[in-house]
Image (cartoon, rainbow, N blue to C red; front, top):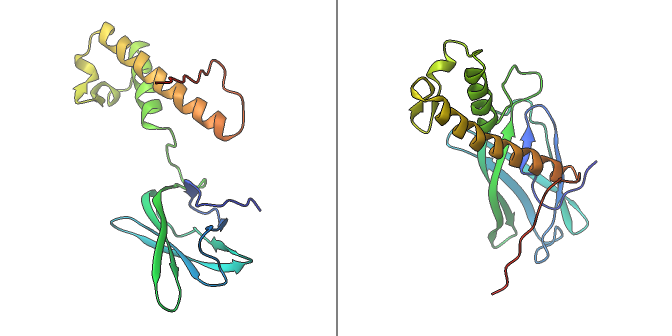
Amino acid sequence: MVTLYNIPKTLTVGADVDFTWSHSEYTATDYTCTCIISNASYRYTITGTQDGDAWVLQSSTGTWIAGKYSYVMVLTDSTSTIVPEQGTVEILPGFASATDRRSHARKVLDAIEDLLEGRASKDVYTYSIAGRSLTRMSVTELLKWRDRYKMEVAQEDAAERLVRGENVPNSTIRIRFT
């Protein structure tokens, strides 16, 4: 079991949620903990169980719907309700579903490269980027957009490698002192 001390930023439909959450000011001996994950259409609730001073939150996600959600961690005792953490989480489609898991940037980059190589399908010729149709772009414009999306995809790839603990080549951290 992977133990985290805050809610994961992504969850996957069909993969069980299992994480530990704690707060330095509030303990599981004094409060109950509930994580509410919701968007305009769906709401999921995970109730924590006490594990020392922390809470273990576990749930099945088999019936959850993929999308972007907000979450709140709610702590309650006999007299008060506290929301010490809130944020966003993305629920990804399950691995059994036939879903295109590419990011927007990767989809657009692939469409531009297909068009430049003359392999684009009829519907890709009407693909729109920033309100502009690919059919109306010159090769120079397409190359400019391709470079922009190549950079965005490279940044996504680097971020994924960092999350996995891998080295990111050619990464520079710049610091400016004022």
